[in-house]
Image (cartoon, rainbow, N blue to C red; front, top):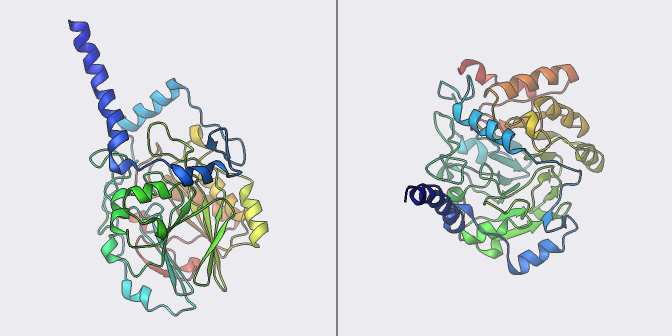
Length: 368
């Protein structure tokens, strides 16, 4: 009898977890029908899954995975800030008064951004919920800000760009509030959006190197070295990528999540350099360095891209790895000085007009 009770205590939570991932709207939906057929026809989809352009080993021994999970749960000194971040409330008036030829960026922590180019406003990887997690009640909780960005504070958005379907880049609750917008996403990600009520007519899905235009601004989905998946067994089922945004006078790369790869040099050669590279800086570890760059690699990637200015993103909002929260920006700025790479670090929420490194603020110095 005791054996059966113990067995039930083990099996019941597993069944509940499986049912949650099968039924919870937050998890999203896998591609089916015509969408699945288009995925299977992609040159980047082989052996039943999307593939990175270069070999990428994501295997982690059970013993290593166990140690990582234990370290995550145990916590560590400096991994989360003790103070509230001194972010700046988003100035919608300044954003909307920008001339048609103007260029501006507002960063809301991690990888959520507004980019305005040639009078067109793009909302990139908006995650405005409390947690970047498969659960609304548990998981990675955002750091304390003076004021978190909300959908109702946004200006008019011309298109929402999504880089991939991970929870810290695609947020169920935020999408529910943006259902009236146009979404431009990698192949397969539209399945999640449609399951959350976004009309299929408002979704454009791209394979790597495919392009589209929003008014006069050209968008290209470029390869990244990463992976996808929101469920228990759907890794690599949707595509991931970075976005090249080209206006009349400026060219920007939103690099999204990626390990260091030869693709950066290819992008630099193909597009002739970038006025600004928005590259990830955080959530790294030597044990998963093939899918997230180390800070020094981020700076080298900017060199490869022939980027005039580097702006580090993917940090300062969630504790997604084992390093102290300030470490990414501190290591990156040291390497950038060594390689003479101009870096811009605006305060979170600040409307940054242009990409002048002199507008940088070392706001994190005052935060414990």
